[in-house]
Structures are given as C-alpha cells and as structure tokens.
Image 1 (cartoon, helix red, strand yellow):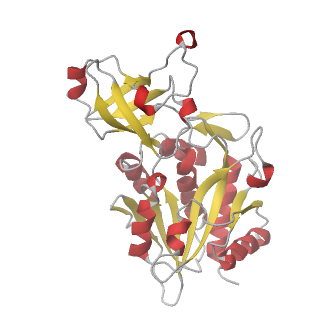
Image 2 (cartoon, rainbow, N blue to C red):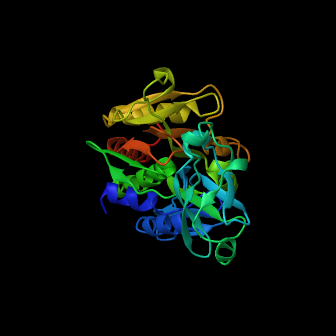
Image 3 (cartoon, rainbow, N blue to C red):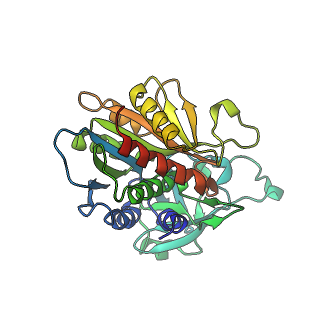
Length: 336
C-alpha cells in the first residue's frame, strides 16, 4: 500500500488507551510483512526485523499504538451516557462532537451541547456533559457497559499538497513511519539487531513502553512520535514546522550520542531535519527506555503535528517520509 493508504488505514482503526486491540491487530498484520514473528504481547505489538547477529547492539524502534479518547462511567435514567477522558483532551472542543462508543457493538452518538441561547458558552466539564445516542437506558444496557471506550467519530482527509488531517495521527503517523522505514531497509544490511514495538497505553502514562522496555532490554531505543508543529499564535522556539523534516530530540534525559548519530545520518543522506530542544523529560516513551534496568541510550524522532489531541490533527506526509528515511539511514549507518 502507498504511505497515505497505510496511514489512513491505521488512523481509522479505533484504539483508545487500554482498548487498542483493533488498531494493534491492524498494525501487527502490516508489521508481519517485514517481521514475520510479529505478535501481540501484553497489548504491545512486537516484531524482530531480520536475523539476530552476534556482537551487534540491540536497537528498539518504538511508536505508540493507542490514541486519546474517553471511558464510559455510567448511564443515566434518561439514557444519556456519562464519560471521562482517556489522555489529555482540551474540554473546549468536546461539545457537539460525534463519537463512537465501543460496546458489544459500536454505537454512534453525539456529545451533548447546550446552545448559546440557553447560556451554553462555558467550557463543558465532564461532570455536566454526556453522550446522546437516541437510545433508552434499557436499550443501552444491552450494548454498553461501564468501562467501554469511546473515540471521536472521524475519518482521515487529504488537504492541500501532502497535508492530511485525522483523529489519531498521534501516533499512527509514527507507526506508519516505522513501517515505511522497514520497507526502505529491504536489501540493506542493518548495523543493529532491530526490534519494533508498537506500544500500548502511552497516553495514560507510557505503560506499554515500560513493560516493553523491561522485556526487550535494548541498548538503544528511538521513540518515534509526534510533536508540536507551528500554528497561528504559537511560540516558534517551541515548535517544528510542517514539511521541513523530522524533529530530532535534544534533552538531558536523552542520549547525546544517539542524537548526534541521527544528525550525522541525516546530513550524510541529505535528509531534511529539525532540532527539538527539551529541558528535561520528553513526555514520550523515550523517558521509559532511558531508565530501563541499567539504562538505555534513548532518543526521540518526532513528526511535526498541528492540533494535537483533537479530531483534526494535521501532518505533512513529507515529514513522515523524511522520518522513515532518517530511521533507515541511521540503522544502516550505525555508530560512527
């Protein structure tokens, strides 16, 4: 499949944190094209790329498979579904959003919205909002249970040029970039023993990466995620730019050796890149790998993204390609 087709297929598979099985199975099927042993372990998709060779360092490529969403907390007597958030969501955007409740079968609904004529101008709180499905309490009770996940009901769309929008590009774009990189590696000799992990529950505390890091115990880990792309009114010092390449992380919590290796690989292969400076933890799975067991050389490679944690996230496919090209170049080039 073409990159956009792969990305859309991944992004439209639901997988809120803790309920990633549908997205994980789709990603696992795609990964088996490059890693025949790919399987799902404790919610994480894990696969080995190529044959293990003695004496080579172990490199893990990580992208998280979960997305932000909601969790059902109760059903009212009137048939409204109460819910709370899974991951960080801006409450300003939730009113009137179409959603899907993933119960025994999928149920479409709309988050209730009080019109401005009746004083509905305040930011909604989860305590006083609900999902309207048009069903009664008894009808819902047959299908929906407390703890079921809820995701925004959104499809991916193409914008101008190579820009696309969707609701789970964080971090299905990272998953797509790793898959694309493995495709680029066909016929090349990796300088590492490579394991791929599409980890679960990143949005609720990098839980899947914590399990995966302990299980895999890598020497080097690269967390492929998204980061902030410059938009109207934002601080350009804290953002990357759409279409200008992958963002290579620099932070006291990351390995400067790996950062420099990624920069060297980008320069050698003439791959566009940007630098992302962070002053502590990165808020990505790299934080889990860096303190695993006796430690791990971890770094981030991020895809610029606008409107993070919304149903209308925006990326540029050129950045996904440059991210994949950078990963492939680094895996081929190895440590200098």
